[in-house]
Length: 200
Ligand SMILES: Nc1ncnc2c1ncn2[C@@H]1O[C@H](COP(=O)(O)OP(=O)(O)OP(=O)(O)O)[C@@H](O)[C@H]1O
Ligand SMILES: [Mg+2]
Image 1 (tube, rainbow, N blue to C red):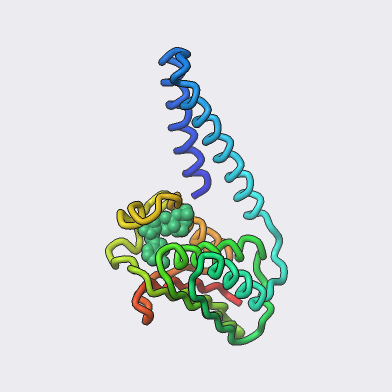
Image 2: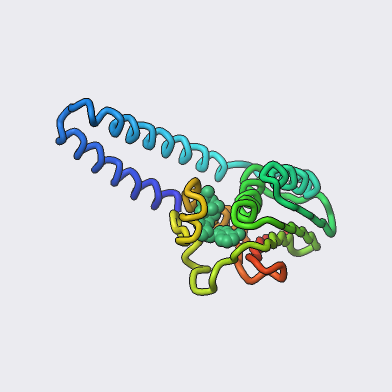
């Protein structure tokens, strides 16, 4: 995914720059030139960071610490958050990457819903983390598309333009790199249920 995204974006950015260069150097274009420069350095920075995370070593992470962090984040957004943990509190994952994976799912719930429940179950075979919310959910027909980089549902664009549509693509990438998966379904709370499952 990273390779695909970086290639596509670099191609478009190169085209932008070429067209800007051809348009001459009127002062009107200075802002546009600066925006393209900023976009390029953001993209490079993001990719460097993501590549670094992919190379992170497996280590220990405490589920309770992860839950506390996600709860705080929700409270900052003035959302109602509850959590539950069942089984061994210590998990072996790539800590930064795995934290980002669950944080991406939680941040979606905080963006699109008001009440959120995050549940972790750690058995001898699987680690399952479920994020339930009471938001608008995602219609069944779009549940594959939302994992595609930069794909956002129209309502999301109207609601809040600050997202980029990368959160779920990154989450799936990280889950797969742990040998697991992310699935979406209807939540008993009325909104979306996003579930991560990785081998314990
Ligand atoms: N909990 C949710 N409830 C309703 N819609 C959701 C939820 N999570 C994701 N979506 C929909 O799926 C789209 C893709 O989600 P994703 O996390 O990939 O991107 P984003 O949240 O729009 O931006 P980013 O995560 O990059 O800031 C969202 O734009 C939104 O339309
Ligand atoms: Mg998101």
